[in-house]
Image (cartoon, rainbow, N blue to C red):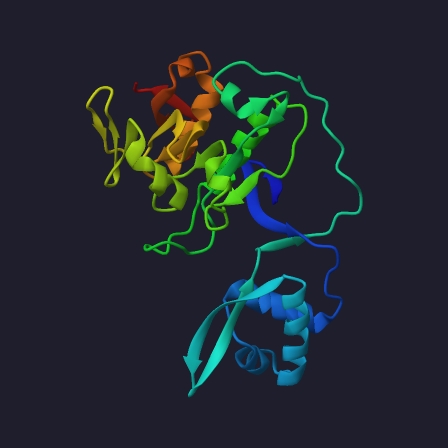
Length: 287
């Protein structure tokens, strides 16, 4: 689940977790605010908040049972082993009413047809985690561009179900599904897994097309390609990625701008700042 906020120049997105109850204690909230800044352990939190350590333990045990926080690792500190805790999501949401199905056209034919079946999204959208992960300890900046992609897909389906997963949270069985993958191999480990099998792929930090033999090195270049899922030939993947986050944004913009051209199954595009405000707002087709 994600919380989306509109602002003047676009949209912002933050990963969220739906919970049935929320801690009512002011101290519990202060603990969460501290963990939002950095992972920590109870004794350190006690010193920082100037609160009794047993009170900190009490609230943290409750929040761990509620799956609001988790022990992400163990660390040797002062001759003892401490559990280092972090938030399970950057934000939490309580819902007071049921979701209502949106009235949408029940069918879709086009570039996304493999991922939409009977008016329902038949795929998982996989985005890079905003938390440091992978060998490079990278944080994904591509996730909020995926909001535009989700809005586009939403206009083509009749009903929605929870379909967004972080690359750090996708299971083995889900890897065999239809996948819409957003982001490059540094910030999305699923991209790193499928990349070698694709005819348009990352070659080091650059983008290589086996169709033309060309290599693209600009930060604003991105691509999208539809292919068979290398883990399940009965499923498909759609990868949208760039050398940098601006290239990923360009790839997503291409879905809006080049619907007919995408029927060939792939596109390599370059992002353009048409109005000179420093952000990508248009794209041109490279191949």
